[in-house]
Structure formats: C-alpha cells, structure tokens
Length: 243
Image (cartoon, rainbow, N blue to C red; front, side, top):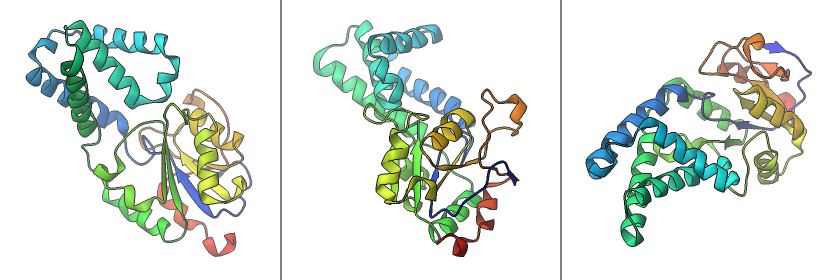
C-alpha cells in the first residue's frame, strides 16, 4: 500500500467493476468475436459488414444523440438498429432482430468467470461493510456471480452519466445514507474513478487488475488517497476503528 493522502474512517466501499475486479480487456474481444459469429449465423446478411462500418455506426449514433456515450446498452441497440435498417429490415422484423441480437451480445459480454479470490474477498468485505457497484459498463452481475455481494448496483445510463460525473457517486451516497467522506471508492482509472470520487467527496483507492500501476504512465496524474498493491489489502483496514 502507498498512502498519498490521509485515510479517514470509512463505513462503506464502492467498487468499479471492469478492469478493477477482472481484466475486461480480455473478456470484451472474446465477447465481440462470439457475438458476431452468432450474429452471422442467425442473420447471414450481416456477414459482409466490415469492421470500419461497425465503427461508423457507433460514430453516427453518438453524433445524432451524444448522450448515448453514457449508456453502453442503448448505444449498442442504436448501432444494431442502424445495421439492420441498412440491410432493409423494418417494423416488427427490425425490432425483433435488434432485441434478439442485443440479448445475445449481452449474454456473451457477461459470459466469463471471475477469479475465486475476488469472490472470497468480496464475501469477506460484505460482512464488514455495505458494498456498492458503480460501473460505466453494463456487465450482468447476476451472470458473472457478483451480485450477491453488493447492496446496490449503479450502471451508467442516460439518467446517470458515466464517471467522473458525480451522478452515480451521489446515488450511492443516498443509497448508503452516509456522508461522502465516510465512503471509500475503489477503481482502476485515475480520471473516472479517482477524480470522480474525490470531486464527489469520497475517499479513493486506486487498483488496476489489467495493468502495472505506474503513475507516470497514466493519462491523468491525480493522486488517490491510497494505492493498493492487491485488493486483499482492503482487509488490512481495521473496521473497528471506523465507527
């Protein structure tokens, strides 16, 4: 552990998910590959959609509705709608294709196993503190098996913009019914998580599952309260001193 700021007593922990509790950079390419293979089988018309076309559909959707960048699920649905419309789908056929395809993507996006040590850690922490999940992504916590550890789950959407915006932090604080400085937020991103948490009045712990944690290589230099070498170091805080 490296302390950059004084840690004060905390009574709850909020967690980022992607790249904090697991390496999302491994799972997403596998999900995209599995989804597209299934999509091409179900809808052969999509086979010749090039990678740059998928990207252009994304650009088009965000240019028309900029707020979609805050909701990965709605953005994906808009991309699929554009794709199927370009192939001549309309009406109920279009709606059915979009709904079916999104459901299959969402399954593949969350079709992975979280390491046993993370399950063990969250179970132990949940017995000490209320835990809240705050994510800019849209992973299905029930499917990956983490939902039971969290008292509340907040995912970025059109009403709750992505971190570092304060909306999800504020929603977590209201749900926990605690003052902001009594909450510790754990996340991998110095901009989204550390900056977002500190601006919201939370304390911040920096931990990245997906990369070496070298401050000089991060895109934003903002010191957290504490840098963790391992998430298990959260167990070293004596909760009896925090009440």
